Image (cartoon, rainbow, N blue to C red; front, side):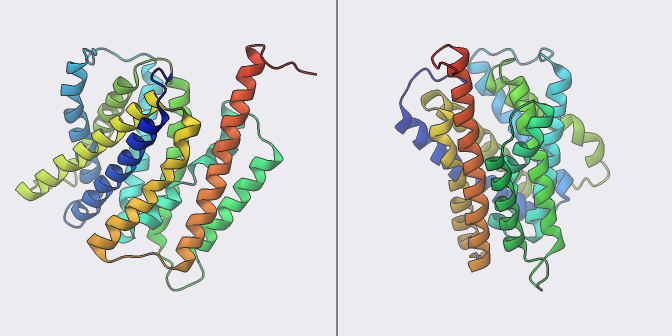
Length: 302
């Protein structure tokens, strides 16, 4: 999204607020998964996300009921986010949210490997080294040879791969529709994909469950809307380091809700994965800015 307002401090503040809100939806998902099937919890997340967005789209005068541009890519994008969400909710059902969330952040490393093949982007030795370091962080965090290893945490790695594919499809759709509309289409796509599956595991929610499901969708819609707003005030390079604050917020929420606090190995894994992912993102932004400058004739190629 283009930056028109140029006030990075406001953008960073909105991004920090978004990173505090988004883990709250994970908290609701974890609590709901104790009583309802993960497929139903994920379905509810998309249903209420879409319903909460309808008044906002109407208020902004955005036409949401027509066929979206590039519908196949829109459906694939929704499918990838749906797969990501289902896998992530399976991961947090039996594992701490911060641990699963950190493994989700392998997505920039997956993008660094796949984007050169799919999108024709560059891949160099520095990115390759960052990817290797990132996966060392994954091994440090998982400790697959110890008694503390839980196979269900591998769902978080599946979520990381799905999210990487979601990011790449988002790049392909970045100029085809307003971000809010694309976000709404994503929610609709999730409902379409999951509705045939959820009938086999359906359990009618009680009032508490219904309120939690609605709250989960509200926090999802609010968090993503704040991210879109943040991008109107600040550039991607200014906002990208704040993505990792989500892990800090998730750790705080998990400590107060479940008494969980990461041990030294988890913190070390978090540090390695986040550093390597941030480096890949920074290098990608730097190279894309250089490429645009060359294209605009601002840099002479010797």
